[in-house]
Length: 309
Image (cartoon, rainbow, N blue to C red; front, side, top):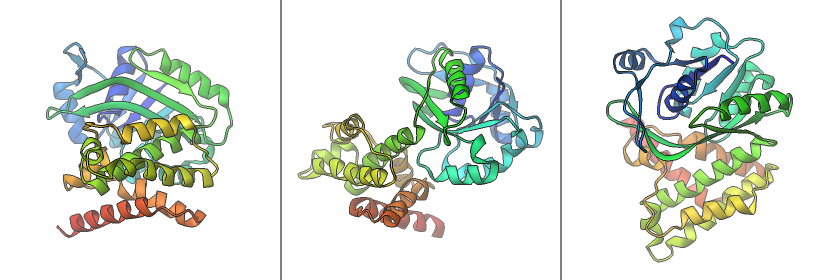
């Protein structure tokens, strides 16, 4: 299986390194500046006892891309999606599967409109990594999994084969999902819940729940997100609810989402992809979401300030 990974950040770089270490035919599609840095220093994993050393993974820039691949793993953020689509388009052949692991659902329309629903799968990545100042990938938790599946339910056997190949890679877990949209909604609702706690409480989970009334914010935010999911035909399980609520109400937790980190750092964020799309779906379905609406407003105010600065 020839695999092209779009992006060599904390997520794409990790999976690319693991596939290369296992001897897979994998290539990273990167920007010229990132390619130069990786060719000079190499791709490096650190944290959690990773042995120090470079991992050599074949690299290409968009200008060098020509041949089709079997699997395209799309790991960019929503803010870079439109450009990424143009970059990797030459690698899409008749039998190519595109596996995006962006959060939310808004990206699916763009991808299916461009490449066809039969080529686009749904995907959920669960991984806790970041990049340090040297561009190395730092592992912060041992989890590194991919759930995947066709959006239209066709060719489940290929999804099973793909998941089995990925699951056999040391340091990677993978599974084919019978209903990947449920999995995507579960993660989206989790992110919306914790982000709402961070944004409206203006702090980490632990800081918010330590304030009087703060512990009620997480359960209420999850209830709103879950109501949108249910109205969309994706009922979230009690297990999903319990995990999200427990995480969003954990005393002393330093947890903040990357969306909130970007917001407070004055960086462009996935505000519209994660929150704007969610509240738009809520309005279309007639689901009231006052907390999510308020969080969206705060994100939009911050984005407007960024554009003016």
